[in-house]
Length: 280
Image 1 (spheres, rainbow, N blue to C red):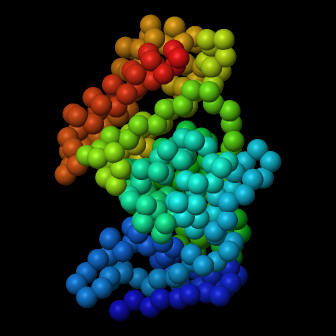
Image 2 (image 1 turned 120 degrees about the vertical axis):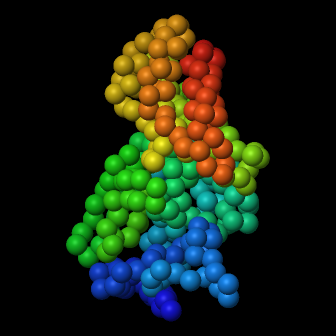
Image 3 (image 1 turned 45 degrees about the vertical axis):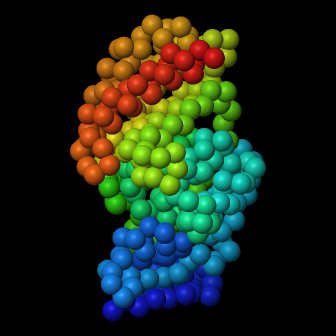
């Protein structure tokens, strides 16, 4: 039978994490489902409750960065004025309102599902994650943190403390989640894309796909090749660009959808971004 801990302070949490192998529990919306059993949840190890700690809950601005506490609820993030619209759009489609009132950004991240709705926008926005333990602090970029389904770079003695989101200016943005319903549904696939376009020229560009690989799909080298082109160039080269991305998008068949469907939908959404959204 697992044991649960509720540290009174953040320092006490760090001590517990250094002494024991614990499962951090904030909102529990993923953990309760993953560990469901007759008569109540059965966890694979001991649990530490963290949602009450103020160091993990807040959202604040620091210069040109937005700092989101790992235990900030999805509802708090959705309604915070300075949260980038791309992230708000994704968060607003996670589960139902009641679950967003409990679920946390940190939980969505550490669950490390390739279908996690908040994760592609974090890639596109260039977010980083602050992790802390008694050994010190590490800041890891989102695209280096995820190692595969359910696997991250978080060490056993570390706690995810903050999500650091640069507040860059984008004037073209696209977020599209494809599921069985508009909301409260598991993602079949998704695209998150943002661009800074000036006088018809691409000054900056970021594109990510969710639920079509073991981790989020984003290729910075491909993006670099597109930066500096005009929107007309992108439209003319759309077929070649789609061919490049087609090699990266490697979904699987599962209970939600087929690999063939997922891949084609992603390529359709990418074409729409290149030919329609960027031309606006």
